[in-house]
Image (cartoon, helix red, strand yellow):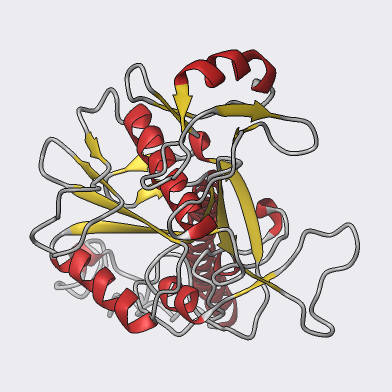
Length: 342
């Protein structure tokens, strides 16, 4: 990331563009990190690493690499949110100077919809006590602001690889990860997301790495909890002893959502598959109920037929007879007791 001195715009270097941008970078770009002691000159590099800007002179950034990643991440998120919200009238601000008065916190990025709905994006690289995280998350929610937490990709403070004996993945398999104290708390309230501003990637931590089409709905969750089903609003304690998968997506492929903030392709796939499974289960329940009703009706008809075949019909009552000849009388002559000619 660099800042163009001509218009103060931030510039993200696309992959494979180091050579084509180098001349412009040397002449017009500077380091955007506040407090950098050597903001110019900058140049570009590629090769074995992702294309990036670099200082041509010795330099120091206040706060070290974590502050650099944090700065890059929040501006990358702001750029993405502005692009995603361009047609919806959503105002996106990187709040470096203005405070959000109702929560007495400064969100890294704040998106405000025309109806007043707000989403706060928080990028976390430095150590953050669990109690402080809960207090900040609670304050956002109490103010009606949707908080989206994006944990930093480095160091292993939040994204901890699985290295326990018997738990690590084999060679060629995707790595597994464990929950930390703070990500376990975050998992109780929503998706556990990570950001890599260098590569422009967002990671979704989720349970089970099988193909989405073959996993039951109750096993498909980003909440990292063995006892919680998709759509279950109850908060439970995530299983910190388990291992989980990290699905990576480009930030530009994610959606900006007023109720959830940031929706990754993995989250969308989980939700779509969960709805499909739930709809299929509902259809199965309807089919089972209909079949049961048909079976009961058929059973009742069979029982009725069996009863009719076993129980003989009651004999009809005998008719009146002529008291003269003894033959049966027509009902009309029953009152007279005899035939006309008898």
